[in-house]
Image (cartoon, rainbow, N blue to C red; front, side):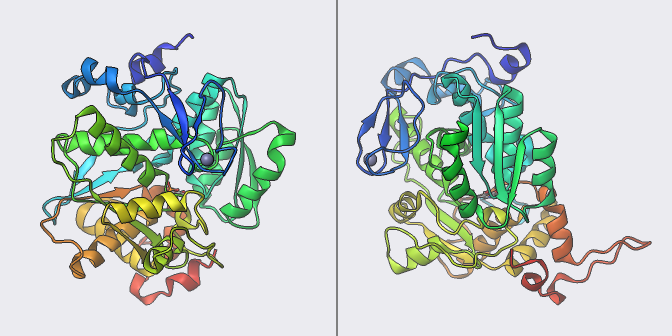
Length: 425
Ligand SMILES: Cc1ncc(COP(=O)(O)O)c(C=O)c1O
Ligand SMILES: [Zn+2]
């Protein structure tokens, strides 16, 4: 396959690893990877991509990675062997907090389309091209739609987008700009997923919903690989991940498993505590976690200004809950008021404009330090999953900003009833 020059230089030469098979996350059945797959035909379980990593163990040393291009494709031996459709995703900055030693912000806002969704959709579109698929459909809370729209445009594929009608303005505008077929739905991502499910067969769409195809996890896995590399091939004590469908949390856990198989993590390393953060207005995972249940119940009347966290029930909830428990982590819900306060705290004291989902994670950090679940001496990586700039309309409303001659008319956020002003969505 021909690879155009700019793509080649951003990604490095493609020489990934052949996929051995897909493995069902429920019944462990192996499914051949010579054709595109969705979920396990027997039980609907999400599929893992499995490789034989033993040849890589002897062929590649982690020191070789350091000199490669600064994109997620630097880990190509841990990704499928396919021509990358790349826009320069990944290898985002790991910013040291100015106030807390051993606290890092992994700033995913630096990705193409301004969020971590670029990684998963880059991989899904790359593999769609590999398998010869032409029409992709996605139900999305907003940022995944923007990412699919961009990568589909780069690859010359059709993208059919279904997202709630009240998504942040940036998500609507970017999808339109990339030339996608945009459908705004009076409902939540779960309603969008239902519509895609009903129409996909007749329309000939391939459904790239969260955890209903295996490659978005592979793309998001690179966040775990980067965390390890950027810390000098170590893992932190805890990782804070704002969780909707949970793809990043699941992908990072897979990354640590594969790094251990390769012997690339310093020996005896304990896996990080995985902390899943949701919004108080939509918290199925913390609820199931506290109740000791293996799966979540669909959350009713989901509302939060962190639109990426408005996921009433994650398809892979059983995987998320299992990982959080096995890691010794926890799941915690944060109110919109707490998110906005933390967003302003980080903007004003660290110069970082978090997205609301990232601010949920920073607020959760403060709470878990205060409760003693974590110590200030613990090394922690917090995922800021997107740039706050994608939420300008939402944050502007939440801050009560109006334009005036001196441009300084924001009401103090503590004086506003955030939920009442911007929600419920
Ligand atoms: C900025 C942001 N953070 C977090 C999430 C949740 O991501 P995931 O579905 O991978 O759990 C989303 C999902 O849309 C998002 O857009
Ligand atoms: Zn199965």
